[in-house]
Structures are given as C-alpha cells and as structure tokens.
Length: 279
Image (cartoon, rainbow, N blue to C red):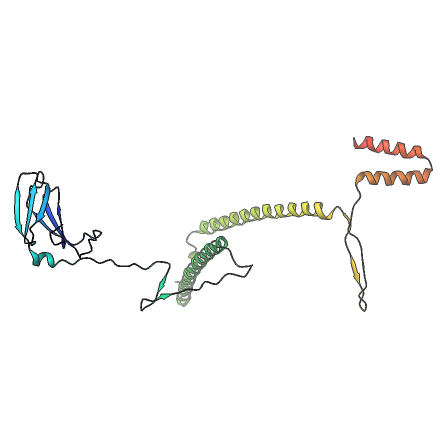
C-alpha cells in the first residue's frame, strides 16, 4: 500500500512490479487495471519488499537477486488507469423494462382439470414435431412425384407429335421391366407385414374382450332393466343377478329328480354319480 493509500503495490515472483489504483475504499476485488514494470530478474529476482516515499514520488523495491531499485513514481501514467466499478447484474427471474424498472409478471394458476401435465405436454410436443417432419417428408415426396409426372406427360406429348415411324411405343418406355416386379413384391411384403402386425393386435384385443365378457358378462343371469312410465314418475326395475354356480345346478337337478320319482334315494344316487363324474 502506498503512503497515501491511493495505490496498491505488488511485488511478483517473476520480478515484476504491479501498481493498482484504488478509489479510497480499499476494495481489492478488481485487479483488471494496473501498471507493470519489469526490472528484477525473471527467474531469480522475486520482489520481497516494496515501499513508497512519504509524498508518493518514489518507489523502492528489493528482490531476491540482491538488487535494490528506486523509481520515480509516474503519477500521470498511473492516474490514467480507471478503477473498475461494480456493475449490478439483474436477476434472471426479474423482468426489466426499457427504462430499467422491474416488471412484475403475474402467473395464473391452471384450474382446468383436463389440462396437460408437464410430461404430457413434452410428449405432445414431441409427437407434434414428429408429425410435422413426416408431413414435410410427404410433401417433398409428393412434389418430386408431381414433377416427374409432369415431365413424363410432356415427353409423351412430344412423342405423340412425332411421325408414326419415329414414335416410341409405350412398352419401350419401360427401361427395366423387372423393376416394376420388384417394387410390387416389396409393396406386397410390406402389406403382408402390416397385416400380420394388425392381426396380432386384433387377436390381442379380441382376447381382452373375451376375458372382460367372461369376467363381467357371462356370469350375469339377468341384467338390470328399468321400465319407466310416460305420464307418471313410476318405474319398475329388475335386479342384476348372477348365474348360479354348478353345485346349485346339481341341487336343482336333484330336486327335479326327486319330484319325478318321489324318493330320496334317487337324489342321493344322482348326486353321488354327478360328483364322481366331476372327479
């Protein structure tokens, strides 16, 4: 530090003397502006002591190389250096207007229960992007095909205007007949692959439907039916009843057999026989 406190003197290990101007606040955060003087040995002349005179007109340096130097302080050169000032950087979360005022941004809450979540919004954006790319690819392909069709039509028109002995027949326009066969075979293979994929998906959906019907529909003997009157608020409704289990059916059959024979032995024999068949 200089005697007046306006400058900071630094002696470096490479023999360089650096002078930094201060604004009187002893703020050592900014060292971008300085004045340097290389006098001592760069390899063995590290400066260990620096001092200024009482009037800041002379600077004294002493290095490891055994040299002692006295310099006249260059006030005009050092005073030309500007002290960097702190610049306040506005927060990224704040909106600043053209005149520097802070703009308070109001964020409304999403009250719609059917609004997309963040994940669904990302998925929808990705899906829309893929659809857009696919549509652009289709449009480019259609444009190329349209250009080829127009060129072929113009060529056919020119061919028809030629004399008959010079005209090219339609079969001669086919440069490679096997190419059409290969394209048809490729299209057929793609159609077959799509059919197999769709058949697998259709079978999957069919099995799922059968499972649902077996679980919720096949076990129902009578579904709930409601009949309403036209002129009065009266209504009649049936109960949703499940089918009886197999044991109940055996008991019903045994009861019918007993009613027909009038004996209990037939019921017992019938039940034993049916249970034996189940085993």
